[in-house]
Image (cartoon, rainbow, N blue to C red; front, side, top):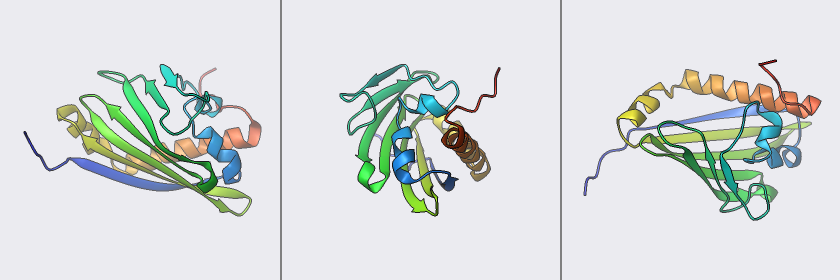
Length: 158
């Protein structure tokens, strides 16, 4: 057995969203994400209800192998969802999202914690900087807000 100190990066960002938590929460789902995120297309979704729920599993394209996501907590009444994402040979990741009412909309506090699973993961974690994460979160915030205001996904390609 090999026990190693983890190579890990954890980042948190709070988005300001243009709708209350009960309107935003259903969009935090592998199926509904396609409504607001251009080119979102999971390979498969395993769900009794057809949307996010506890123990929902889905797969997304990734290299060198598809990533496997597992919804560990799904608490609409609290505005909280947590998922694990395993990217074989790259990283194991915990994603948590907490929504909180804020004025007419809400705030989404989003935390990703990536742990390297080897050399590819070491490279990924090294690049998972505050600057990178803030850009990723602001892009997500822009796309989500566009959808919440217009009912359509923001398109960057014609």
